[in-house]
Image (cartoon, rainbow, N blue to C red; front, side, top):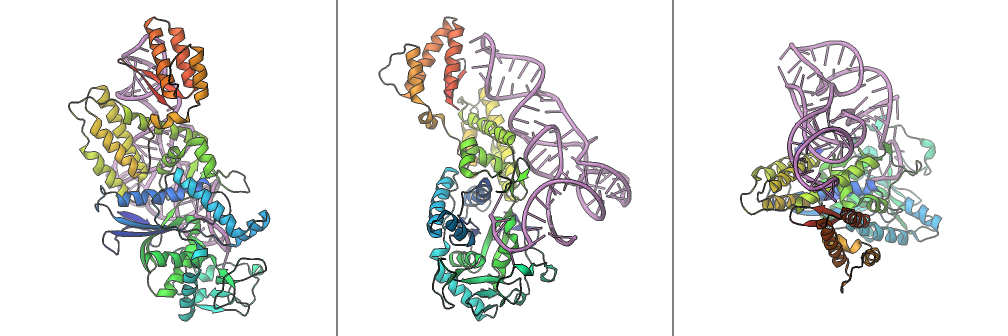
Length: 478
RNA sequence: GGCCACGUCGCCAAGUGGUAAGGCAGGGGUCUGCAAAACCCUUAUCGCGAGUUCGAUUCUCGCCGUGGCCUCCA
């Protein structure tokens, strides 16, 4: 497939260095606070990329994919936040990671194969730093800080298209007089009082922000790997510094394709703590559900900004319902509706820089064909299977209503059964619903529409939706 | 100030040098006891100005606006 490479600005063919195997690294979070929808969007984009690459239906016939995404579980932010909460920063990270991973499961971000943590990779990080020093790209200060000498890397700035000479730096912010240049960045930070630290050749301390990512990427994926992803906000300095270090350590190209996702805006504004408009993942799942969130993410181009609004999310929920209904529509045995072009079209747009918005448009067209076919008495089961398969590639798991029955408030249903004097032995939610539907159908036959409508509206308020068809009354949980 | 994106129907959002996907919402119909769902029909000249061109929303320049980055950041 073709992906826009930030390094060149061009659409480039993803051509794995190892046949049939794609190695991908995506920068994860520093887990000092709850994950927000921006983090979710970022990981969802790469999750879809990996799902697609692994799918046997793609142009390559399906790749094996190593998908590594890290946790920066020790960093200034964690120390700061830990100190504020009077909590051990590493424990804080541990707790936040557990929470975030639980949310990832709910978001069905399931494609990641390794989730390394800085605190578990200190040895490898020190080895990387040593290589950089051996190759003459770094220096050690008397206080035990190790810096990367930016000017020694002639390619510096190639990703962000920046020149070192243009950089405007605030010299007043510098606290280390031995730093040769304000542009230089820390590979190893000497221990400060009360901070977590590890032993190294350069004394006690902890890794700098950038070295961990390049080290972990290379450790798990090799010196050179296929795709490195992350948010556009990481291009400079983080990814620029990763390239500088990694290529200083090995002398080889670090990542072949650099892929960057755009930022999520909320109601047209940047999400930020100062504006107080940060939407946490937990809140988003609670308000709209994970599928609607994913649909929203997929409905736009991953590189652009993504404006999350309440109205757009309401639309996503409705749109999702449309797809869900198309999967449930009755299929009559007989002539099948035509679907031979669908997969090919889907593949074509996905191969073209992960154009998920176009892929969704194809699925909505398919849903329409299914609905129409069903209405007109065709066999749509094959088309429904295709729709389901392609939705799975996108990571959308359309829930069947039976899976949702358990979420209904059974107590209210039991009360409802009592109100209507329904006597049944096994008071499961499903049985109560079926009994109420039966009662309603009898009422309808007796032209007692006020009772029928009352039951329908009572069930509706319990999230059970009824649809009358010629043969029967269908129900579903919304 | 520098670098980089973006600005398309009420909302979200694709896209192309030859008059613009899809979803939501809206309007009209079919179906229904009434609904709901579904289906059919229907709603835009693409921020502003100039240039290149036979022709630009699509290319160039300028302006305005929004967002990102310029060592906290998915």
